[in-house]
Image: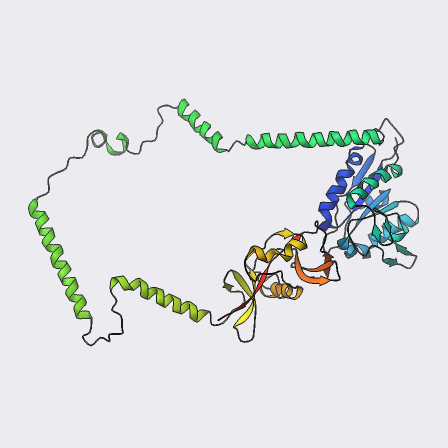
Length: 423
């Protein structure tokens, strides 16, 4: 029996969406009986990379490296595992295929005691000529799939169907049909949820049918006796004398109350002081509350809520500062993030990198996270060159990230800010 060919895909966790598209193009290889693809170990942010199995690197025939800014700035490129991959390439034991999915410093030189290396030595997908590529990333995935067929050879037709163009298309159609069938099955299962409202109603109806004598009676003979249920309550006539006495009592009580109020008000009361009649009590309470609020807002306080935001920076006089919106707006491309403040209201905007750092240190993970920030990357308005924008990772405060702001697939969290000043 021929040994199976092994393909290992190494990529950064931030690039999962594009890698998912790459996997779709390589689906026939996943389904092939004599090919094994390992792709379940993405490079986590600011963490050392670990292969899914300790022997996976030594068994790999083809390494597919998905190059991006996250990949090139990851700890993986400084690890012994990365050198092991390049060692196998230098020794002719494995093929290494770089797939460039965005503008990044992919052509840098890697130096070691034994040799120097650059991805420029290898065939890249897409092919880069004079610093630019003539095709899209999706087209590069198609070309990569065709190229892999020339590297991963299947010698035995008994083990698996050869990966020719006709069978490749057939397998893709079958996979698409499987996906449609799976969606229909999921829909059916959802509609048949046993705890749905309709199911509960049917269950209750069935219980009533099986037990017709079992009913819920709020007023039953068992609770109150047969007489109280069968006959109405008999009312006795009220004496006219009793009603007259009640009327006299009420009039006397009202007169005593008015007399007591009159005695409680001093005769020399200043005309400018309002008398606390019942109809002015609420107005006075509102005046007191408003005065208290105005007094509390004479100075801004870090972490306090103010006009739809959370204060994260205060000037020395306490009268001006900055506030962050009360919640994240979700992940989005930089172009949408730059306009995100318009969705909230006037003067809201995307924060600079320095403002993101201040937010993290005062109301984020650097403090008690009153702002409710996520442990992820946030876009900033601070640019790096013509095509990149800087980001801050709120989990650890790493501010060295910078990604292409023109790429729609680069979607990160957004928290608008606003300048404030007490008047």
